[in-house]
Image (cartoon, rainbow, N blue to C red; front, top):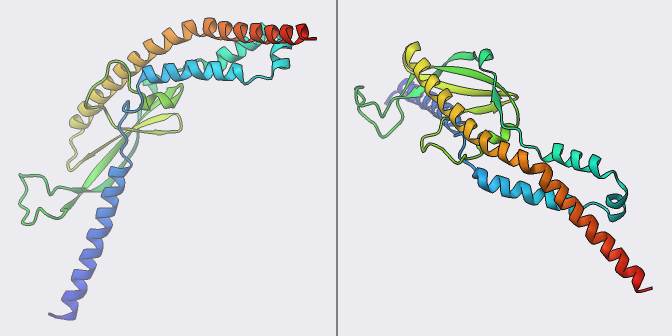
Length: 227
C-alpha cells in the first residue's frame, strides 16, 4: 500500500474522529426537562427547610425580633416562583451547520452501519425567554409525559435545539410547537402545585415561629423556677 493512501486513511480517520466527538458532545449536552425530583418531594423538602430555618435562629434573636417582619422575610425566602414564558419574545438564537450521523437511516445506501456515517446537516436553536426559578425545569410535575422535551437553560432563556439533514422549516416549526405545548403543560401543572404551597406558606411560617418562641419562653420559665 502506498504512503499517500495510508496518509489519506489517517486523515479520513481523524476527520471521522472529530465528527464523532462533535456528535457525542451534542448528545451529552442534551438535557431532558421535568425528569428530576417530583413536585411532591420538593414541597415536602421546602416545608422541612422552613422548620429548620426557624430552628436555627439564635434564641435571643428570635425572642426580640419583630415577629411580623421575620415572618414576611421567611415567606419571601421560601416562596416558590415557577417560570413564566415570555412567548412574545421567542426567537431563533442560532442557525448553523453540524455533522449528523445517518447510519441508522434505512433509506440511505450505507455499507457499514456498525460505524457512524456523517453528513452535513443543520442545527436550529430557538430561545424562549422566561422569568422565574429555572430549577423548576428539572422538577417532575404531578401530571407529566413519558417523552419530555429536551432543552438547555442558558441565563434566562430556555434553548431548544433541532437538528436536521434538510431545510424543512415546517418540520422544525411543528416539532418546536409540540415541545412548546408540552413545556406550557408541565409548567401549568407545577404552577398549580406551587400556588397551593404559597397560599399556605405564611400560615406554616407563623405556626413554626410561634411554636418555637413558646418553647423558648417555657424553657426560660423552667430555668427561672429552678432558681
